Length: 318
Image 1 (cartoon, one colour):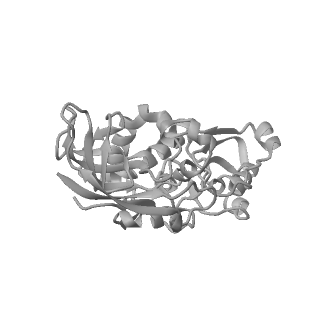
Image 2: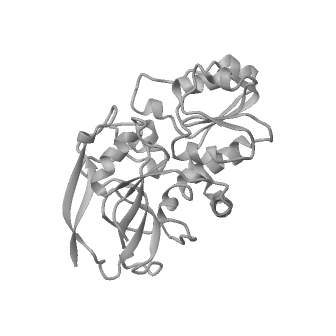
Image 3: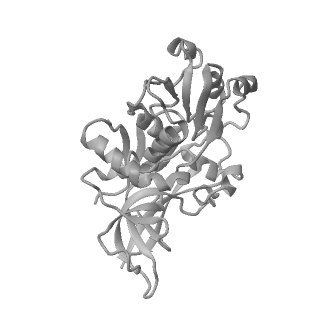
């Protein structure tokens, strides 16, 4: 059996700010079957996570492309893989059956063939909307959880500054109530006004001037967890230059990290987050677009601050 599969690709490498015209919608004939004896799994896409880090994969070169499998460069014209939730429509793998819900790396398209299943897992919705499993209960949530609790180790009463709190990771952090958290989406001149007693923890999603301002107002033994530098992704001339005298004499720790570094925490993170969701302690903010054609606009909108909350595309209905 075959269907027409629509998917999104880039026309050429993107080395500056992305525009919708940089992307192309392709339609190809797609087999809804697997070869006998293969371990392939065919997945129908339901929800896709739209993440700014993907712009670094679209560049002709980024130092990130040589660091981890999630970050490898994208070849123009080929399907773009991303984290998502889908339903198995055909399987040659003994661990997956037709009808299974799965999460993992699928494509910016309606259907994907997943060859080898190291990046695919069966999904138990746990009574939550499927969209939660590409956001608050997935890598965005794990990034916030690991960066905050594992790296920053907050203490009661400490002052926490979260940049880009309207985004997916920042919004998750904004819900954490373990300590005093002031969440701001922009705070260069306002830094000392909002934090007259200084900052103890800065969770950085932005980089550049935001990082400089935070470091300048940090307290002794301040901690910076850096999981993104969105302001620098599309502007090669923009670079953070924190005052290194402050870093040295205040004994500030700056640590870059990826959610993939902390998969050992996923079970604890998932259990704790599910519990908080059931008890209403976490309020989920999602920005969901519809259909594969909306993917370019959804992605480009991340760099124009169009989204409020975790950006998701619902590709197809169940």
